[in-house]
Image (tube, rainbow, N blue to C red):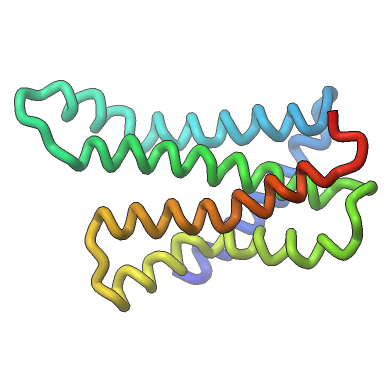
Length: 154
């Protein structure tokens, strides 16, 4: 599992190289890439079960969990894309780069960290969703603060 999550670092590097080769405003390119990334994950993993299962006669809470998880994944992908963009900025204070690196590594190993927590404490599905939400907030708020602190941020 550790090696599988380590490959995610290469995904981030690949995302950076692809985005830097496209013309346009850089922060907008990363935002579009994050939305596309989250949308692709939603379509591939959750769209069909939500479409088929949620239309049934019986109501099940797992579809609410899946939709909330999709929202958490969207915020997570936006945070990761903005961290990659912040890492490439020249006008960012150099003292923030270690924080950005740590947040990016935490994002890559998020599935492993949360899986260890679930198995260690025997968490249920709702608590697991809450832990994913808290982890995303833990990464998203510092990312937002770093983005807001940039000079000439229009």
